[in-house]
Structure formats: structure tokens, C-alpha cells
Amino acid sequence: MGDMANLFGTGRFALPSGQEEATDEAQEAADEAAEEVRLRLAVDGGDVEAMSMLGAMLLRRGDFDGAESQLRAATAAGDRAAANNLGVLLHQRG
Image (cartoon, rainbow, N blue to C red; front, side, top):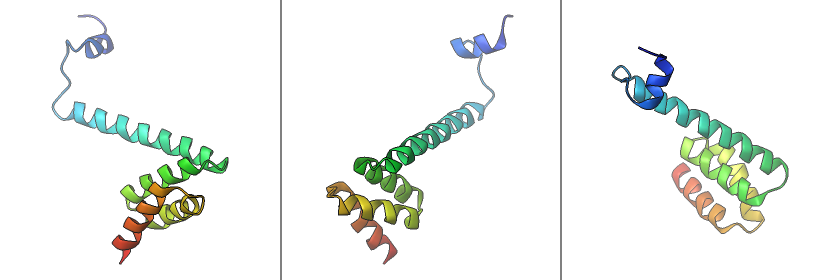
């Protein structure tokens, strides 16, 4: 039959029902975690755009406290997208 991994890779061997979605979700989670690490390193270096992007990521995740500090810092540095997202965050908090 051949190497099962090779068959999965070529698409000639179907994954059991639900396993493909789980694999896709795991890959998306790994990609997001890697992006968060990259952004946090850039934030540590003072990158304003990274502050804005990290704040937006945390806002989407529902981490309002983490998002607020990043968005406030980016807004103070003049990032307009961060200012908009900070407004969204404050509106959601009420």
C-alpha cells in the first residue's frame, strides 16, 4: 500500500470523518500562536504597528485587559487603527 503519510499528503487516502477539521483547527491555532510570539517580540522592540496588531488579536480573543494596554500604547504613538480598536473595546466594555 505504501507509506500512509505519503498517501495522506497526496490526498489519495481520506482522513476519518472529523479528523481533517481537527487538523485544520490545530494548524490554525499553531499559526496564531506563532504570530502572537512574533508580535510580542516586535512589541518588546517598540514596534507601534505590532502593538496595534497584537491589541486587535487580543481584542478578537476577548482578552480586553491585554488588548487595552497594547491599543493605548499604539494610540499614544499615533496609530489610528489602534485608536479605532480602542474605541471598539471601550464600547464593548460599556
